[in-house]
Image 1 (cartoon, helix red, strand yellow):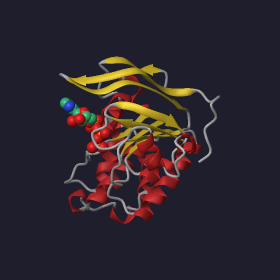
Image 2 (cartoon, helix red, strand yellow):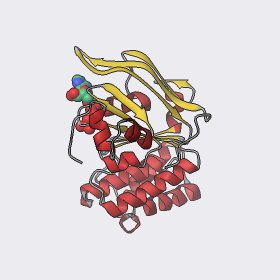
Image 3 (cartoon, rainbow, N blue to C red):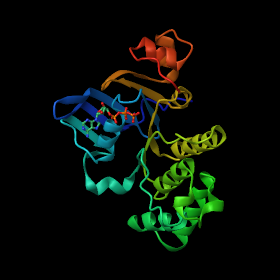
Image 4 (tube, rainbow, N blue to C red):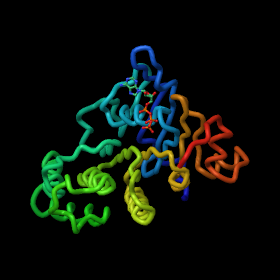
Length: 249
Ligand SMILES: Nc1ncnc2c1ncn2[C@@H]1O[C@H](COP(=O)(O)OP(=O)(O)OP(=O)(O)O)[C@@H](O)[C@H]1O
């Protein structure tokens, strides 16, 4: 993917950030800058600290030391929550309600109603290929369908900064491809994205990737830079070169 030019301003900065729970240090002196309109991938194995870092960026947890700035605001900051879309790993759906009712509920939180809300519901449901299931109760959905509905809800208010924590887990390769195409379109229209993944193929599709292990950032760069510097053919080999461990896709 073409690199987002270095002259484009950073809209997210993570400076000397550490996070500890009681006696456990989960993030250790992390520094990351993300440019406007960039897809930044956070790649690391289970337990490496991806979700913890994402929670700091989403403003739902605070750093122990260091500072996080998102869209010119020091986090956490309630006033910019409407500009952030956060899709967590777990689903936050109302299972007794239909997909449409879930979307209407979350839309109302962002003051969306009437024509605008209907149009956006149709758009996001078409994107995740769930239009035919709009009126079905969510408890009848498969795990992958719930994941897709969660993604649709996250996109509904068209946030400037989109944080997706392992968005394509449980989604088949064809739909995964179409979701990635849509994410790339969103970034072309100015949305900044942070996506966590442990899937190497997905890391290849990001403008830049941060490799994380045991709470430490091992390396940051475009997939090409990371491969070239490590003299590796694949991102996975590069990850091992920088100090990661081999893990399953
Ligand atoms: N509330 C908490 N209290 C104590 N330890 C925690 C807490 N939340 C996370 N951790 C620990 O922090 C480490 C990083 O967890 P985190 O969920 O950030 O990893 P991850 O890279 O997102 O993993 P996965 O890919 O499995 O979601 C883990 O060792 C986890 O046990």
